[in-house]
Image 1: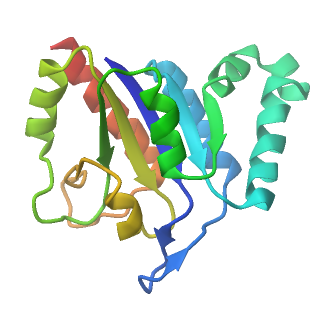
Image 2: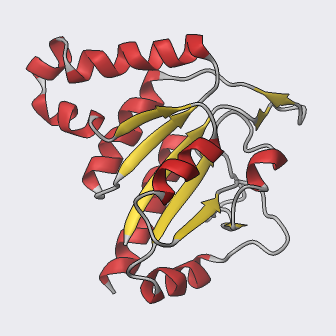
Length: 187
């Protein structure tokens, strides 16, 4: 099974539920690239139509791929080879589909949605579909806009802790998701 990630910066929601384009952060790219390399992700797509934000991401990537970061820490260079830039989620899906005979696109959300896919059911999906490709779609800011969710095959139920608090960073949510998928694949 091939795993792909997409980190969406547009269209996402602000705290008032309005559609926005969020800012790319160095930490998100850096930490998700490292988690992607650790868990064998095929590619990690940073998605934004903003050319200014893409230029920022390119500068961060260049530091680790060609600049002082690449010379200082070759392991980070390996992780950053996983990072790709794309304008839209549909562009990501199109690129991945060229390499996959069957692609399942799953959105993530911190909010419980009716009909969400439980982690138990996701485990069954992963174990049953060894030859499939799965794209996990993560939103920045206050989550994915409905336009984005409509492009997916379903939404995974939220990651729940032991307290009532539910506000993970996207970096943490990606790491937890990848760890769970890794465990599902090993069983």
